[in-house]
Length: 273
Image 1: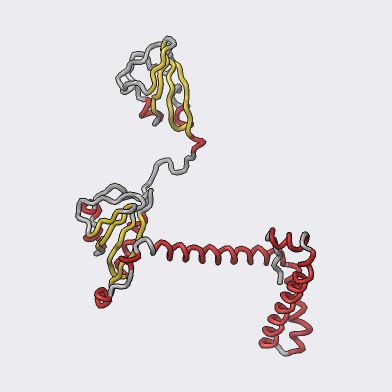
Image 2: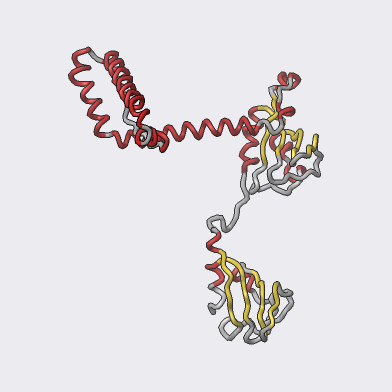
């Protein structure tokens, strides 16, 4: 009853399509009547008719009027959660179609309380690029990898040297307990030291070789630029001659203009004593 319609299509029908104003108004009235009947039914079940009519009903109507804004927020939050859960379920159902033949029921597995599930390797998974021998998932969790789907290619019963790559779909055999214990390891992400950075933190910084940075006479490899700033020397200008991506053994000279790419905050530390 308290929900306010904010949908653009609904407002267009109400304002611009006059022929729909009557049906929409009737819909609003019916909505309120249904709400009142539900409230009346609940009050009748909890209280005597006189208390329900004289006390309960006015209090509920007053609460709806006074707290309609908050109710709207709660309603929209519940509605949004419901829709996201619904779409997540649909997505899981779609994902299960990646390996439809593999995921169908296998009667021979039923006595073993085992099943085959499809899991997708995330692009930032901690184990991307590692072999099954290195991972030792079978030894640790008791599960088996029956199949790897990589693009349009299938690898059945992969051996110990098979590597897992991002976006691979893996058919995993195990019991419910084994799969539940294995899932955190499968979903583990690689830890990045700069996970809180974004594209705005990237910069190309220009410095001049002078007494401040004390780079004169040092090679790029021995200059400590990489260690101090985490940046890369991507160019050097010397006597109006430019070298892009110079060799690490190139030696800095007085007055060289050096371009360094990396994290903005750390690049500023280069000219500090």
